[in-house]
Image 1 (cartoon, rainbow, N blue to C red):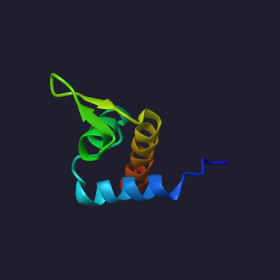
Image 2: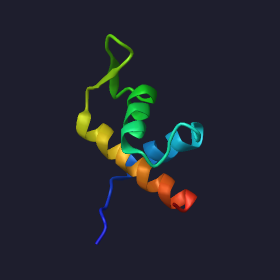
Image 3: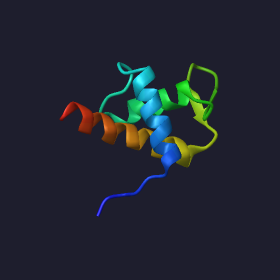
Length: 75
């Protein structure tokens, strides 16, 4: 059985991938960093890093982007 994700998570992830197709790949850490940069879920801190205000939501969106990109690109 697969995981059922909320429509909000899917919509945000797919919109991010459509607007920034070259920024996302099959790497969770990279996708999480990009989700924090491109949404209001991350707050910039010193050193150019982002701190997640809603960590669980950011993780779920980044996880779905990994799954979506892998499925879309066939890897």
